Amino acid sequence: MKNLSIQRNSVNISRRDWLKTSAMAAAGLFTASAGTANASSLLSPQKRPPFAVSSYSYWHFQEQKYPLEKVINNAARLGFDGVEILHRQMENESIEYMNKLKRLAFDNGLSLPMLSIHQSFVQPKAEDRKKDVAHTIKCIQLATQMGIPCIRMNTGSWRTKKRDASYYKDGIEPPIDGYTNQDAIKWCIDSYGECLVEAEKAGIVLAIENHWGLSSNIDYLLEIYKPLSSSPAMGMNVDTGNFVGDPYPQFERLAPYATIVQAKTYYGGGHYYDLVLDYNKIANILKRTNFKGYISLEMEGKEAPQTAVPKSLKMLKEAFR
Image (tube, rainbow, N blue to C red):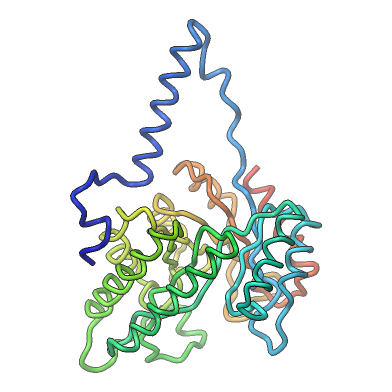
């Protein structure tokens, strides 16, 4: 941890504070150059956030993978701004294949804002955590090759409870005998710290997600995030569908920290659970926090993506207009 920028003797300023300071400075310069003109009247109206689609929307871990090339072409045809790539959906990790995806997105006028990976730091054995740190560092290299600026990260889970309907209802998962949730929080902070050293060098944001497991508890999630948040490589991916109980107060707590937001939809009924979300309410929460990052669609319903993804995009555009 001592190599992290959060412990350097440099000026400690958060990304949001930096953005606010920069914006104020820019506003001051603009006013000075504008003379008696009313600067506020010349400012552009607030733009909607850009919309990406997660490749997961087309492939819910079925046996046969849905090609990422088709996801990119579909996204361009439907009017998305970008594509979030699920690491497990990649055909391989060759440079040739990654460059092919990057070029295809570029030719279609699309960004690749996030690479979603799977790892867990809720593992009692140090050597197991080290393996997932190494996996994360490898994925940082993959993201760098593809020009992807952000990686979706998890906390992990104890895996002491079956992932059934009751699990998603209360999110309670008891620790392994002999350990506590505070142990797991420390493991996450330490492991993230190792990954952040490499992420800072590469200019890649590691966005921790409320992705069940330990992060079902928002207090635990913030307890992990906050000590690391002064690193320029630390971020947060807020998933609208991964909350236990009333989602809106919890979403409101996390929204000020959001680097990117995953927007769940469940057309045709959810694969794991059903949830009806009020995206007008969600959009208003994000507007109040001045969120300008990507909204990445995760269509997790049983309806065919060919019809459910366009419906989801239409709904999001109406909510965020």
